[in-house]
Length: 443
Image 1 (cartoon, rainbow, N blue to C red):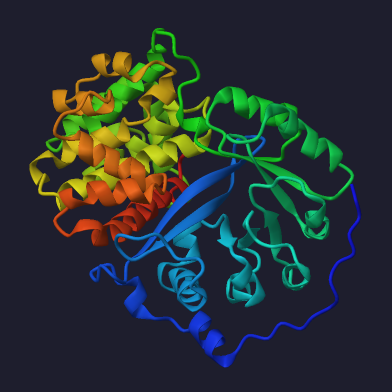
Image 2: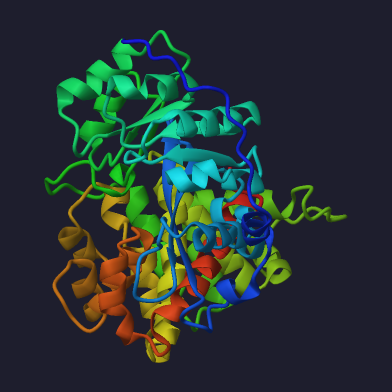
């Protein structure tokens, strides 16, 4: 690699106005009942080689009807810092590291220093000019302990000084030829850099990233079926599917819950182990499912059983698949209430919960839904065959993928339009994280 001398040492000083703008918590920007003040945030998982979530890239948009203006320095500074201050980084990333894009102006203003060093990775966008000011700004962040990430990296000798500062380099698998996917990590292997393959959408690309030595993988490969051929759903997964359906019916009672749990041996075992754990600190050992149900109550046992069923069904899949399924279930339900479909909230919750069932079972969605006792309209939406619920389905997925243009097109189905979406999404994320990361009895 050609060596390039870094720029001279420079002192970057934020003006008092910039500092105030970056650090002041402006409640107006976080209020979701004001459409011009809404802060839209979606997250995309980043996995390690073992398919455990390492962090999330956060994708922002400010206000309704337009994308976040990363070139409006002060406005962007306020949006980023306030989204962390008011929403909370734990709520956004479940305690994982947050990857955030920074333009040259934001780097020079050292906006990242307003965010927690151990929770943030600073992504240098591909269109940033790697001049002496940018290099010095990144050096100062590196000295403070921030992870420096080069986004959508395509090698050019001018980037050499930033390459030497980088902790992680991201390679866009969607737009990078296979030869370059392999060549860049190999040629830079002597440097202390980790490589992240992004926009990995298939199992084949995921395996290629592993074979080429990538440390991290980003994309929705985990939510796609591994095969497209029709095959039988394994019996234990089918049992879990029926369990999920039955325990989430609005009229479920103790007798039904007990019958469902007793029918699936692993649920009975895990329930009794859960209720007798140190978490409850009970004086006497609980020996029957009925007694456990009486202690936990209908809502708690429904939540717990859904969690265990999802986790069991996805035992051979990345954990994030179950998390996203639970989050979608809640997000879909909240959207149903927001668009006047209260009478269908349970069906729509199940639509979200089962929206990744093809990835769980490695069978085409059109085949899986035939075996599920779901509302016919829900089946049509899941199989992309139209119907009254499909716009809601498409809206939820578009928000999750940060497809802001599509979100704007579909949002009119909501009573309060786009402005309600950030609050609903954050509530769904918090709900899913609570049951997966803050509850006991999962193993």
